[in-house]
Length: 133
Image (cartoon, rainbow, N blue to C red; front, side, top):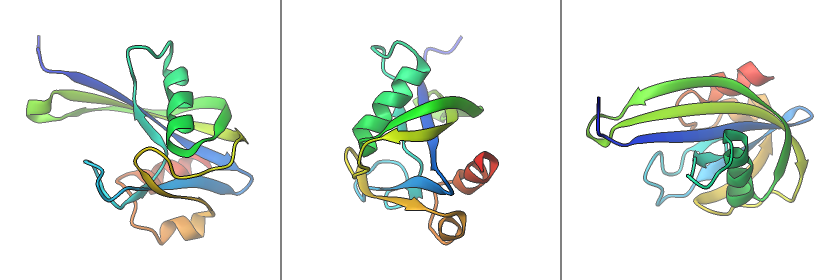
């Protein structure tokens, strides 16, 4: 049994009509600085559920509320000496709030799929978004 840490991350494709809310990661982010992706982050021990963690991350990163949360995919990555990571991706509908760049986020945009295809995206982001549309 490994004694290395195991991290759990949640992220979400937030849909509003034919647009998806994307974030541009801040240039000082540890992972994929300056890339575009979907909101999300690490599950905290104080989060009651994975969905609660996702709702908290949406509020912290972009200031929005979501509804109709459904799991889209999950995978486990071996991070070598850093341990492992479980990545859970959800799809949700925009409910309320004025999207704005907050914690670790340089920009926030509602974009259509053709605009998204032109961006410098984090790995698997395009495939995940297309599976949710």
